[in-house]
Amino acid sequence: MTDYRHRPNDLGACDDIGDAERLAAQQFIHGLLAHLHEDDPDRQRARVVGVMDAIRRDDAARSRRMRFPDWRLVASTAAVAMLLVTLIVAGLQTERSALALVRTSIAASAAAGDRAYEMRVTPPGGTDEDEILAGRIDARNSQHFVIDLLTPFGHRIVVGNDDDGPWAIGHDGRTQRFQDDHPRPRWLELSDTVFLLDSVDAMLERLPSQYGLELRAPESLPDGSLCDRISAVSSGPRSPDPQRIELWIDPDTRVVRRMELHWPDDGRAARRGGSGGRRRHADRGDGEYSGPLRPRRDFVRDPNRQPPGETADGTPMALAAPPDPNGLRPGDDGPPPPQFLDRPPDFRGGRLPPPRRMVFERVTVDPFPEGWFSPEIHETETGWSPEWRHRCGDGPRRPRPEP
Amino acid sequence: MPPPSPSDRVETSAQEVFEILVREHADMLTAFLRSLVYDSAAVDDLFQETMLTAWRRLPDYDRERPFGPWLRGIASNMVLQHRRRSRTKLLSCEPAVLEALDRRFGTLELVPADSFRARAERLRTCMERLPQKLREVVELGYARGLLLREIGIALQATEEAVKKRIQRARDMLLRCLSVDASSSGEPEGTP
Image 1 (cartoon, each protein chain N blue to C red):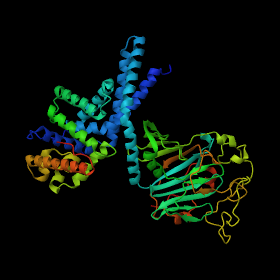
Image 2: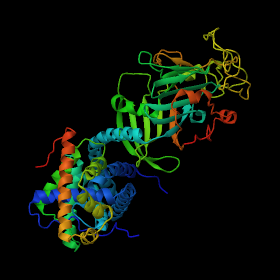
Image 3: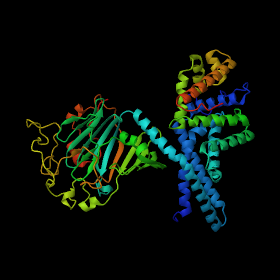
Image 4: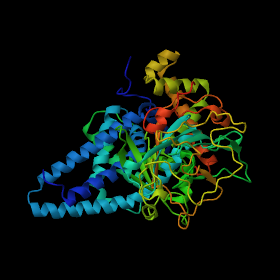
């Protein structure tokens, strides 16, 4: 097969057009057409890498040519300082570009098709080692998504959005639909923290209006892929939403590969005693799990509610969670089940702090089957194998759906 | 190995920031060079020389002005130098043409879109609106990389006829792109 890439093309020739404007117009379209057909993203990336290599080589050679160490230090520091000032000013463009990149990413996400993100949570006051795998977000766009999470104490919560609007399946397996006058809650209260229940796409769409954006230097993910980086800091009045959001965006598809939500640690978690992560309970104070947990004193059980894991006639529900290695089941004398909050939490004066960090990381999935974003399929689909639940580690959470 | 000096660290951050600028303007610069140079290998060389020169001359960059036109100015000088030292055939790069070309690219940068590539991609939609005869020559020339003579053989037309068709196609594409920009609420901008 002929490689036309390095073949001089004569298509731009317009010798018989004398007028400079017309000539420029012809060459302009020629340049765009040639660029569109010959310069794919790989080639552009190679050009950028080539330029940066050349710059590093050039800088190294220029440094070697400087004979006098003192002069070299003064001159190079001054020159570099000037460069940085210039680049910061040129950064006015990068600020615009950060917004452009986020907008591109929003558009790309809307057209990217089926995606999934694993959700990892670092509890309040916790360290990176306390991070747990809490759930998964399946998304097609901002209007079609499913957030399926399992709390550290075995309660399963699923929320989503389909053609008929938002819905949620509570820890008791009951499905609820929400309307405009009663929107789907964005917050879920656990025993020791309050989770944000938003899709990656929805968070992304909030960025341009609610956050100040900064374009950072490209950064690699652990798998080695180089991503565009955006740092977003909340610019509005203090709200329970994350104070800072970090984004890793695929430079080719412009789709988010990783999103980190950060809340400030005001020390309340530490005062409550322990990180509150899996196997830990903030109310115990020692941070270690060593036996059945008692309900919080301020938790009052609804006497009319069915026991978790059972339907009204007492038969086990499809979603009934098996006991964990410590014998705890949802509804045992463990922590209270998760509750949706009808209003945003007040992290300044509220009882519970936000998590320290939530991370959404893209994972590979096949296209989702018909009806995946509606609640019906998730009412019977448990997805969480006991082994996986207890490990809360890697591996697929549910069999890949057939396309 | 000695630890990096403060100067080294600052220089590294400057390079990282410059890399962002390079990536952001890579598509625009490549398209600009392709509107002046036929040969892809020459485009690669000129791209690198332009960016390297921009890096060296950054202290001269007027901070009040946008980065894109400054980069195109350097690229224009590089193309002129290339013409002097090389026998590679170039497209017209007379000063008046270079100025008009720069204005065209400047106008394209005003079109609301998320990237230069996204703006350029509008041409694909415009190509679909071309009459069959014109779309055919554009596809043979740009997608399949055929020379005028080869397109003529494929279409059983003279080289001159093919050339005229491509020119007409480009005129129509330019109008389509300008109308597209106008309908997006942006000025057509080009005289």
